[in-house]
Amino acid sequence: MQETRYTEKQILCGIVESLIYTLGIDQDEAQELVSDVEVRIDLSLKKANEWQEFDFSEFVYQIERFFHFEYPSEDRRILFGLGAGYQSAEEWIEHVGQHLTFRALVESISEHAPRISFQPVMVIDRECGPAGAFYGMQELSEKFYPAACQLTPSTRILDAFRGAALDRFWSELKWRTDNSLTELKYFWFLMEGCGCLVFWPVLLISVILFLNGNYLYPVLATATTYSLWKVFSICSYRFNPLPAGYETFRDLAVMIAEHDSEAVNQSVEG
Image (cartoon, rainbow, N blue to C red; front, side, top):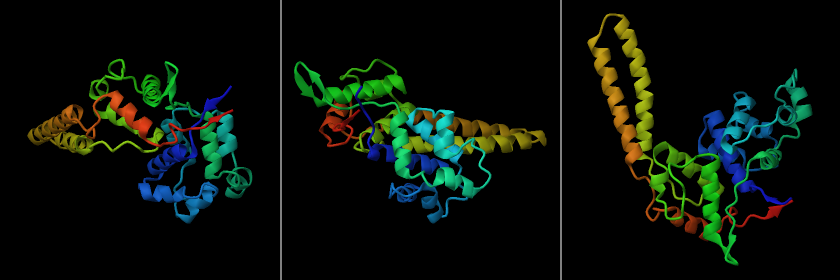
């Protein structure tokens, strides 16, 4: 049976994101780590002085979360050495590290990740790029991020996804199409995130003050912070962060089909 697989470029996007979350580094630093896919992962991390802080369990979790699959326990043991009980770094390198390059990781993800195609499809005996791109978006929504309504080419994007749901769907679509999509306008998303980060410390301080007999300040501070957080949340949900020219899924499909990306021009592998 023949099927399409994600390309190396697409998969490296997910590995970079996984490294960012695992190590707390920025995009450029993560890109530098994977700049040579033939390099062993441990040597690349050691060169960047990140090896001592690296947690393979967290890294594998981030990969599985990004690509929507779960490694079998045997693959975890063979590929990463997780659960193998190696007693020393030398033993891990002998059995795992010397074989674990970024290319080996890419190939492993390619074998396991559920695939979604954006390739052209035949419509009334003619190859149609936008139709293939739309079917890809439809499958993406059905598998991972169910839309608020049934997707059709004329469906407005904001009728299907808003707020955090739109951000997740857009991110999934972006890496699958070689980062061809313009970034969303993140102002209100950032404000909502800041409101969330501020609310919990204020709540903790308020509880401490409340237990010490100071009742008015903690109540007012918590209520005010929570109200601002909710306002930011509502604004991020109602705000239109889409770039100009993107209104319906037809607009997105046409753009993806016209963009010369590997998602559209993938080869088929056996």
